[in-house]
Length: 151
Image (cartoon, rainbow, N blue to C red; front, side, top):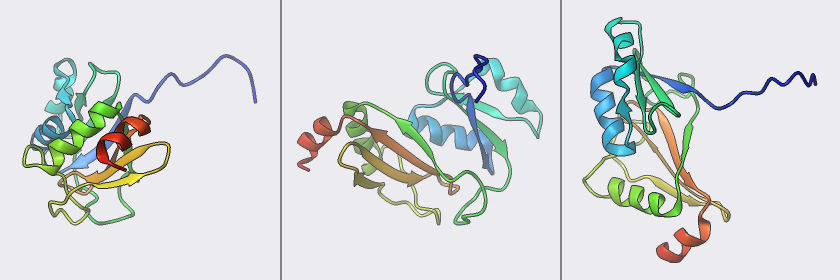
């Protein structure tokens, strides 16, 4: 391996296909706290361009493209996008999506509770957006969550 100093600094964005970029942006804001990045919104004036969202001012971004969403298909789209949160954030996320505040879905587009898994070192919640894109919210604050969930 060449040691020329090149290293990727971070993931810039993940591209997703949805039938309506602005409707999808509303869901991503409600469920995951992503907001439209106004400084890049002009890209969305092009029907082929992305609507850029971020939860942290552009450090982590989603690029929403108009198009066929994966739905229940395993062959279309990325496999899964995982977002990291701290222990309190994980519990708040579960409260949000298990109530009526912010619905999540299964791959068939049916409203469903997230599937929570105890990985013994981490907890993860698995779910989909209304268009079948798959997500995970994970925390490595295992003890904090286990104590409060009675696990």
